[in-house]
Length: 240
Image 1 (cartoon, one colour):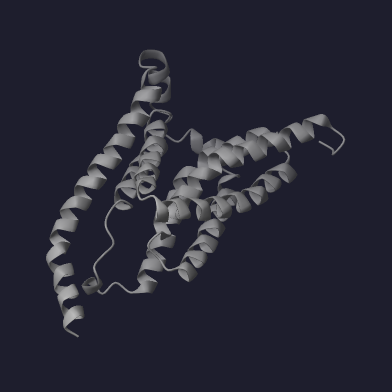
Image 2 (cartoon, rainbow, N blue to C red; image 1 turned 180 degrees about the vertical axis):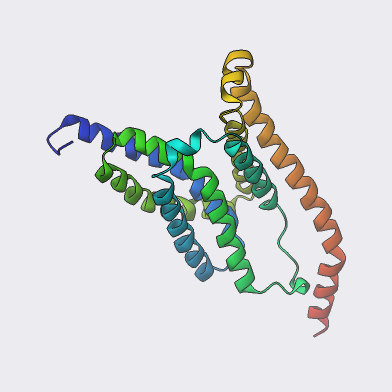
């Protein structure tokens, strides 16, 4: 396709729309993973998170259609997303846990890369479909997704800092995506479409509720265990 071809610009608009819609998922993950870090470290995590997301898409673009046919791949990915969603709802470790800033930094980057690997497949397939075998348009789609993810993650982090409920909504979104992935796997898609079409909206809702319920429940238990430690730390600070 050439610049003069209307189909080229239609494909460009489609790719931008795909990046805005699907790139938001990556932005939410990055925001959730590094919301507890200081501002300077947040920028480092955003950089490597975006770098990892783009690198993952470059790799996946060559295997996207083949990977879709691999049985249970999306189900495994859905389970990973459920785990990540629950994990991101857990409270910040107390100071006495001796978790260094570098450990938190690496942990955030690792979480982002795992989640990106799981969620980037649909994004890559959508871009490849819109690009109609044009490598130039595929590259354009990958490039245009960078500012969307960077800006989106910073915007979501500001919301999370100001409105803590946004954290729960973000984790629930990961559960929603996991539920949708589970019913669109190669081994479940045909059966769901034929016998249980209602699962297309029931499964995401239930998965989102599962992440929020389990995540908040575990967080409450962890917070209760940490309270004596936090009180002890506060007492030591006041006595000094």
